[in-house]
Amino acid sequence: MRPTPRTALLLALATSLLLPATQARTPQPPAACLDFDAHANAAWRQAHPLPADGSVLSRLGQFEAQANEQRRRLLAEVVANPRDEPERLLAAFWAAGTSPDRLDGGSAAALVQALAPLQSLRRPRDLPRTLAQFHALGLAPLFEFTRLDGGRGALAVVPAPLGLGDPAFYLRPEPELRALLDRYRAHLQALLQASGLGEAEAANAAATVVQIETELAQALATPDSAAPQTQRPRELDRRFPGLGVSVVLDALDADTRELAVLNTDYFTRLAQLASSASPERLHALLRARALLRLAPALATPLRSAHAEFEGLVLRGLTSPPDTETLLAETMRRQLPGLLDEVANARLVDTALRRRAETVVREVQAVAAGHDPRFAEVVIDLAGSATPATDWSGLRFAADDPAGNLLRLARWHQDRVLQGQTSLLSPFPALRPSLQFDPASRRLAISAAALAPPLLGATPGAADYGALGALVGHELSKAVDAGERGNGLINLFNGFEAVPGLRVDGRRTLAMNRADLAGLSFAWTAFNKAQTAADTAAKRDFFLAWAGLWAQHGNPAALRVQAQQSVAAPPRWRVNGPLSQLPGFAETFGCRSGQPMHAARPITVWH
Image (cartoon, rainbow, N blue to C red; front, side, top):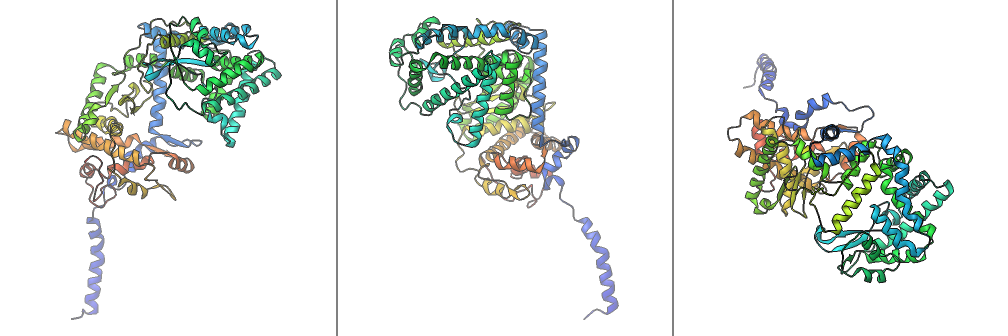
């Protein structure tokens, strides 16, 4: 029976009245289930707007800046009140190297001392005695000594580093590397001129140094094919005439019967140089090598030239680093261990260490339940697995910055010759970092990492969601996952990094797999440790992970980041792995099919 027009009108009216009510009763998905990164990090982004001239602003970038400020405060406290011998050494080194008056005031005398060996170099045959004098000062301009087998094996003589480090910088034809070589030549000229040479003489000397280093780079480009064999020093003198390796060792009172040679092509070319080069060419090379080493501790013209080349050219900074930043970098390269030892003692008290260790060990235990090889990883928590260094014999003066560098170099040289070695953490204590080292199978966690946002302000779920998940991330690298988690390739290929550019799921697979494995290990550890945790605590776990990756930036910078990084964009380091964890969907009430609840979750170790 067909409805009358009046009945049809009433039905249509009733339907129109009921429709909004029906829609109102359909619940909207929770915001956390649609885009957890946007939900978790909205407040941070609002509180930290991107500066007008900024490219990218991130929570981890802020953390790094906080660590730099922490370093400044710590060093100021140590200089004001050193508590033991390592702190007294650190205080003197830092006070000398950060005082412009001391840097400028002692520069002339330091320069005279450092270049004095050149006075004995009148003929090529004088080179061995000149090199011995340089080594006695603490400068190793052409070759240096090391120990094989990680510092525990035979003594070896090895090439001294080139001014630009990598031989490819001298040899590759790319225009940007040719430009780098030109800027390096200009840098050498600035140093040589600031050391007392005239403009024309400095320019010629700089060109000579670049030419010689390019020849040495060609020799270094071909590594030895055979294992190094030990020989007597006198035999090496006959093999590489003109260098006087035995003369240098005698000057250092080194009781060495045999030593090996690494990169024989380099030493063959060096011997040819020693026998054929004019004294002027040798002078230029040795003078430049001494200046490159000591410039950070000399007068303003030399120090500024070093800062500009190091910061603007090598690091790509927009302005030269300040004196403190440069000295901290010098300490990282030449005095590793001392600042770490002091920082570990001052920053990590017993309660904090115990709290972090509990999380780390529980996460490791969960991982070991899947594969016992995870249990073999050594945990170095704020230096806990790094033997203390014996600093005896090392002395610094608070008014002698260049002399401190020379004393430090001599101390290192003596330790190598005596066969004394130290196991150093792969990362500085004051740089927030976690890293698994495959060679030593050690997971190092720095002292600076034991602070928000990696470790919660108070003990709780956030410890597991941030520090614990990152520990799991690094631990996962200790065992080859094989084909596990390969479904992440297609998952991440479907994510948009920036408008018009998708994430490269294959390039970012290793990091994505480590994120998912780490979160899974940490989530299991958290639930085992806190069996009575309520929903709020569980949400804190996931919010802590998301908070690590808070970031925003201008589209151009984010596009470059997405195209170059081996990790997925931060938004997807949050949403990607969490969408595969059933515990996340359960905690936030996400239904299957919503973006943050995968119907068929991808797993790595489950």
